[in-house]
Length: 195
Image 1 (spheres, one colour):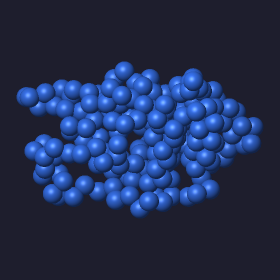
Image 2: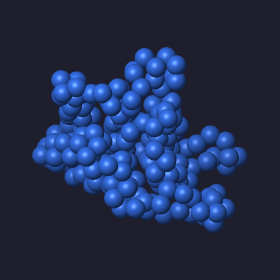
Image 3: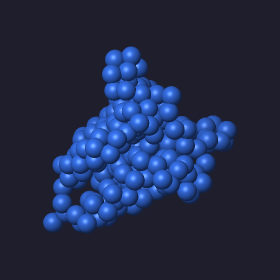
Image 4: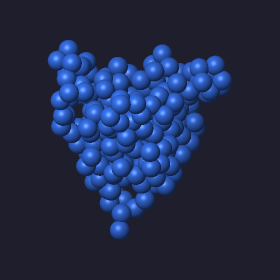
């Protein structure tokens, strides 16, 4: 499978980068073609310009991010204030475009999917909040935004997995090892070995 891996953390020694390095090695070893984008390292500009926004529904966009060329996607990022890092939100805003990731029906109603090529999506996040707070109080805002706001409308047939390492700021080695083992199992299931 051709996989796009997007990392959105400014620190190279972060858990996001640690997980990305391991996943990239494992997936490549299993025969996948992994393209890695480190949004901070490449200086990605997340803000839509006024001209881009004005042209949003009038101008055909190119698939600059290559979304239509990949079979799977992996997003790795921290959850800050129960949301995506601005750079990742901006990448989604500037990459999941009309005519690329989706189309509107003629009456600008529901979205028509534009990414039938995506078979699987793995999102991996770290957060300081405990799992009970994210689930019961905040009601999993990042999970809901990505699953129902981005991938269900744009790639409804893609298998979607969301892994969160809660309490990441006080992680112990046994918990980290357990999470990394779980991550490896999920990735193996979502992205089976290439023949």
